[in-house]
Image (cartoon, rainbow, N blue to C red; front, side, top):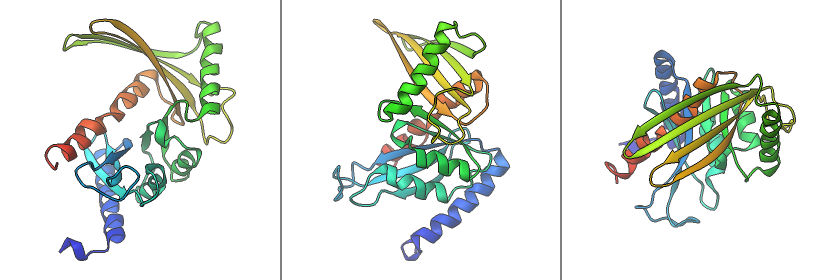
Amino acid sequence: MLSVLDRDQFSACFGAWMADLCEGTGLRAIAIDGKACRAAPGDTFSGCPHLVNAWATENNLFLGQVPVPNGSNEIAAVPELLKVLDLRGALVTLDDAFGQKDVVTQIREQGGAYLVTVKGNQPTLHRAVVAVFEKAAEAEFAGCDMASSVEDGHGRHEERYVTVIRDPEGVPEEWAGVGAVVMVSRERAVSDRNASSAHYLTSLWASADELARYIRGHWGVENGLHWCLDVPFR
């Protein structure tokens, strides 16, 4: 019987129902991420269908899903997925693949906040964010909000340091509503010790502890949703 329903109308109704449910449970963070359906061959650039999903990381709720149009890519599907979500009061987290100016502008216009990874696919933005932290380092990060955590488990020792700079100067103006930039430095020891760092852009005015939680929480979509699609649903 489901096959006779209009897919777009059903999706809109489902999204509205989920929005009401999330309001009652205090929804905050929504992770947007793509999923390749490797077990279902398709006439696409990768040989299989692709989906873009919305996952409430703290509520463990699946909020919506749109397919990537044939001949296109996952980025093109994100605006359509955002349209069916009520983003008022929500924080949308995205990896660098979806970190586009139009996407963050749409999130702001729909009443939400964003937290996006910044990498080399946005070279001008990446250079600007790195420059903000280089300048702060010269002043020994005076006035910056910072948080740290240490974890041991499974033969691994990991230290994470989160630094937040609010109202950063030099970020390109076309990025809507920038409130802060974030740097996460990580030192991990398994057999050898290695260090890495990552940068983020956000419209959210929040503490380093809170932003650290949202950054780590984004990847809950992998275990909470994608693992279930891969293993129980094959």
